[in-house]
Length: 255
Image 1 (spheres, one colour):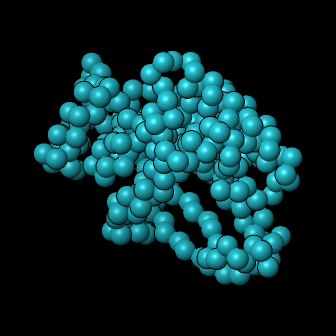
Image 2 (cartoon, one colour; image 1 turned 180 degrees about the vertical axis):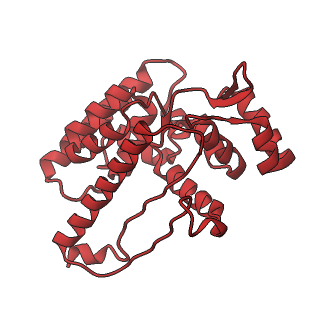
């Protein structure tokens, strides 16, 4: 669970800070515990216990998951920017209007294919409708819609539009995030290729360390451009875009 790129002093500061955050969260209410935080964050009990005891230095993904589960947006941003300045600035830019992070109840629905589809439609500027859900997802979609409404994550307004209960939301559980990328890959319609609706690309190669850094920056720039278009051109056409970059073998970073 070690964080690469940090010296021992930084790792100790991160571990101590995360321990304080967990202590403050659990002690704030009598019904909170390591077990309840594990359920809320979707992480294992032993992982949360070790973090709460200051016995582990977590990966960035674990930090984001834990702090996203227990902190407000502002607290989340402050923690990340202190311990992961570059990543914190990236999150802050993309969570400009985000008032709701993913959490235990929402993650449960986001990991379900049909519920996730409805949530992503409802969380758009245009929202969706019972008619659309019926047409696309049939009776199973209506059943999941009822569950989502009962749970309070989607609402039906006076015009009959189905909308997410907050202005927007963001993933802070990366396991849920990866699950949704897989789900969205299944939604890709090859019939849309050749139109403005679809683009598909996959590239692989070997580069040096500087090239890998440039690739990551290119991905960040791409995300920034997509976010800018979303804010500037709201409309009635829901879309999805996924971006993944990784390496085939972590040993390559050690050579």
